[in-house]
Structures are given as C-alpha cells and as structure tokens.
Amino acid sequence: MGPPYPLICPQARTGFTLIELLLVVVLVAILTAVGLPLYTGYIDRARASEGIAGLGTIRTVLRGKIAQTGSLSAMSAVPPTDERVGMRLEDLNGGQYFSMGAYAVTSPRTTGSGSASYCIGVDGGAAGNTAPANSNAANIKRSMDEQGTLYGNRSCTGASP
Image (tube, rainbow, N blue to C red; front, side):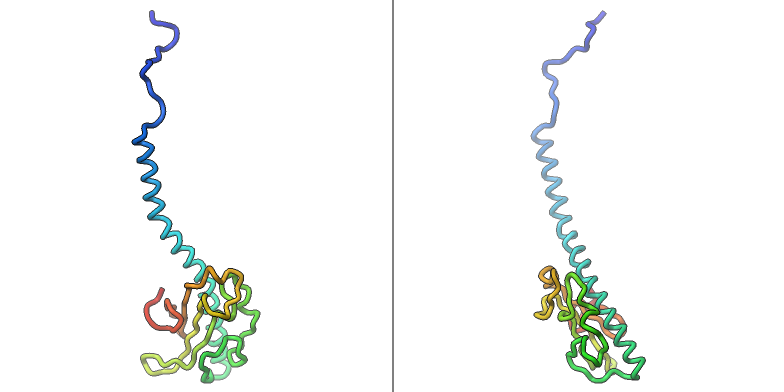
C-alpha cells in the first residue's frame, strides 16, 4: 500500500513563466493599439450626432417656412435665429457640444442643376459656439442641404461623412 497522502514532487512548479506573462502583455498592447482609434472614432460620431440633430431641426423649420411663404427669401450667411428663418435662440442652445452660434444657414446656394437651394452648416470650432463642452467638438464640421444629404464639411460639398 502507498502512503496515506499524495506524493508531492519537489520539482513541481506553479504560476506562469516569464515568456507567458510577456506574451499576455504584448497581446493586450496590440488590442489596445487597435481598439483605441476605433473608440475615438465612435466618440466623435456620437458628438457629431448632436450637431446633425440640430441641422435636422433647422431644416424642418426652413421647410415649414418655404411651405408657408412659397419660397425662401434670399439670405446670405443668415444666422438660424434670424426672423426670416423662424428659429428662436433657445431652440438649439440645450446641447452639450453645440450652441446656436455653431450653426449657419447659407442661401441661396446654386446646385449643380442650377436651382437655388440652401445649406445648413455646423462647426464645433466656431467662435460663437458657447456650449459647455465645445472644446470637445472643435474638429467637428457637418452640413446638410435641403434634401437632407449630410456632408463632412460646413459647405454642403464633397463626400458624406
């Protein structure tokens, strides 16, 4: 018969080797290097969504103004709070990243077809942007035309974001 307790080998090792620990550290570093830029992009898109929502609000007001009057009077770089547009200052000042000073309406804007339209732009780095976290949106610029097409700049040109 054997002993009443299991034999313990004096050379038995427990724990991880240095190579195993280094491999885990390298894998975590690679995952972090890949994931961090993706995460930053998601944050910027979430911040831009507030500006895009504001663009949609202004677009809705402009569409109502056109339906009411039959046309949109010629405006050049009119602030959205202008009485001709019909917005109130409080309508867009509740945002975290964009205040009313970040938005501008440009009309008329000649499209490729030669018809007049308008462009609504938002710029997180605009001097009039007084939102609480405006410094986090300084690099965000978007615009929307009368059709609701989004652009990755403030002038309704170029590719969509």
